[in-house]
Image (cartoon, rainbow, N blue to C red):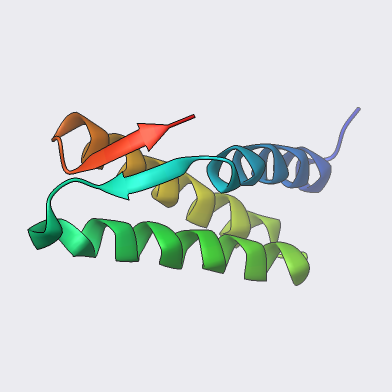
Length: 81
């Protein structure tokens, strides 16, 4: 059985890799806060991953994805995968 820690580590790294490979462009300069927040959450997730704090790392990567999806749906961001 996989431990919760190992599961969180695996999922965090998987989703961080996907985020790191996205080409995110800001379509609306007035919404620069979206991109700023996405980058901050990605940075936080990397930081917590390095510290092996996988609960916070996973939480940060989930927030980053939420900002990406909201920004894309609202037309603030252009995402190339």
